[in-house]
Amino acid sequence: MSYLSNRDAANEVVASIAARGGVALAVQANVAVEKEVVSLFEQVDRSLGRVTALVNNAGILEKQSRVEDMDSARIGRIFSTNVIGSFICAREAIRRMSTKHGGAGGAIVNISSRASRLGSPNEYVDYAASKGAIDTFTIGLAKELAAEGIRVNAVSPGIIHTDIHASGGDPHRVDRMKDAIPMKRGGTPEEVARAVLWLLSEDSSYTTGASIDVAGGR
Image (tube, rainbow, N blue to C red; front, side, top):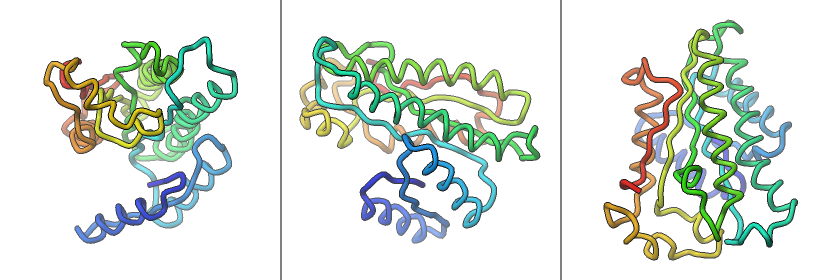
């Protein structure tokens, strides 16, 4: 796994996996920086062997804003991480997983968002647009790699209890928005993770180019 800055949280995840008999590695990398992504994959090669699965879950947003108040630097930061970073991570995974390159195949799961279809007006139109790009990326890449042993799918979370809302200046957003959700509650990271795990598993062996909404009906 990679992390941007929270080393302690990353190490806690590694320790939790190890306690359950698994093997994990935490590597600091900014997915918006190509050379750091390349280095990340090289470290995984050396420590864990050939990659067979990728989850593109790095994503950022900025303070809630209307489009008329956004500058190009803000939009560039969002797209560099959310879109370009996903492309570069996928590129490195493909070079290792594709049967065209001598790999044994694998699976890629991109984390999109229900925002890609709702638009996030008056809050995060730039973030929503970046996730719209991820939806298109998922469909195109799935078709491109279908004959090379790699399945590509997406998970589109709705309003989930994570720290991303605080980074947007609205730490109580889940509670504020819950009445607009048919299930009347926010989701949990674990509920999103279960959908990701299914798409990575052999149980979804005939599924590619799909997107699963984990959004409580919203």
